[in-house]
Image (cartoon, rainbow, N blue to C red; front, top):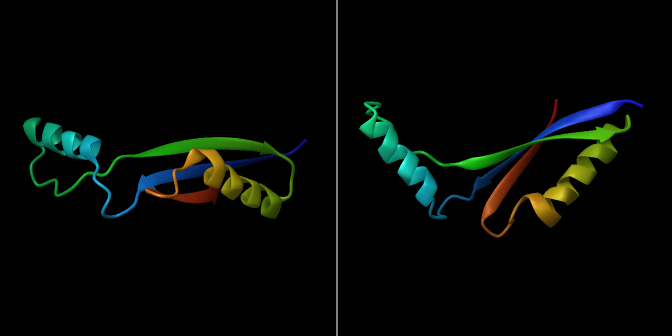
Length: 82
């Protein structure tokens, strides 16, 4: 059976505080990587879905994000078929 591969990227919405991103930003500065203006952290999910219907796979992935993978109150997500 064919498999559709996708990458889901979840990031915090603009305006939502990102303490982990801020900690990474300070750590990079401490390691000598000056000039880093801002760091925002996120999550990446690589998902494989059985089947050949790309439209259905994309709809299913969006539903997965809405129900589980992303907290849509504070996070944005994007789905890319790869």
